[in-house]
Length: 384
Figure 1 (spheres, rainbow, N blue to C red):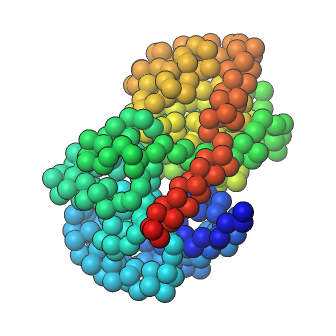
Figure 2 (cartoon, rainbow, N blue to C red; figure 1 turned 90 degrees about the vertical axis):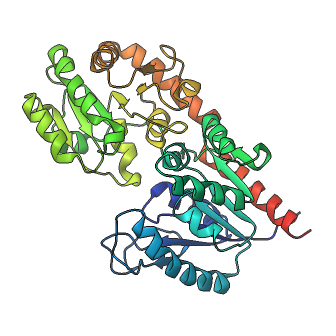
Figure 3 (cartoon, rainbow, N blue to C red; figure 1 turned 45 degrees about the vertical axis):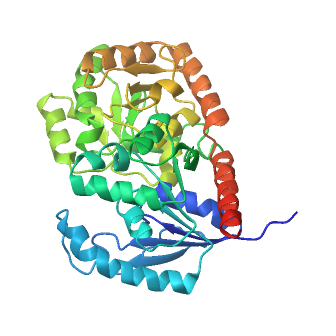
């Protein structure tokens, strides 16, 4: 039986590849997809090319240029609600789906539209509610108003339940990895030459240069690794507020020449960067489910060394599929990196197992098919 095409309105950050990738799946399946996003900071119009592939973008400009919380929310939320209500009336969607419980989730909840779904990303339910009474109250309010909630980890589901949401309306849906795009393949010789890493063992990190991702531990680790492998190079593919600080740390340790700070890489170009590396590392202090960058590295057949946070142990069996290490421990991290750089067979074994795990448990197309079923179920219930 042929199903009707849905009219879905997503609320989320247009500059997030994970948000856009989620919405793009449904647009490519010929559903009518809208994305409502706050106008990105520093932008003056919607003319930027976000590669939305048929998604209709609606940008909400914050009336007051205030960035200090909670004043930002208090003064900008009321006019945002008025503008958003007008947009929703014009679209008349079947479903509203907000990504992130705070910010977009709160805005969506205040519209009083149903069916209304929320996807929690991690810090919005693991960290934000601890910041203040007001934030905790708004998170609980938003979760209560949602008809359905998704997240990508069991401990996140438990946190959502502690905030008052009942188990039956929460389901684990992974963001998923496009295993066709992120796959093992040949190395890009031009990129290797461009980065000056020919004949070098290479370690890569894709995490942002922010305190939560603890890139300083990887830089401290490099001192030990380069003693064993003087030619080793470290690709730091990410942007963030700590860039100058991290470069200074590498310079002070006299290993700056071993690093390649390449900035934030467009998602379309990530596979070729992962394919030229020998080992992937994540030094994050916190994760929800498995991070997208870790899963992308595994899909490309890279062995991974990741910190013991979130549900990483549910994805990687230490010493069998990769390595799980304590946070902020440069010594152990160095030991694992050196071990893998010394053993091509072990790198290959870990990489093959990691690829299989992602294919079986975190495939983008399979996860979005599950999400589509949820949309239809909620829509049918709302019509009863």
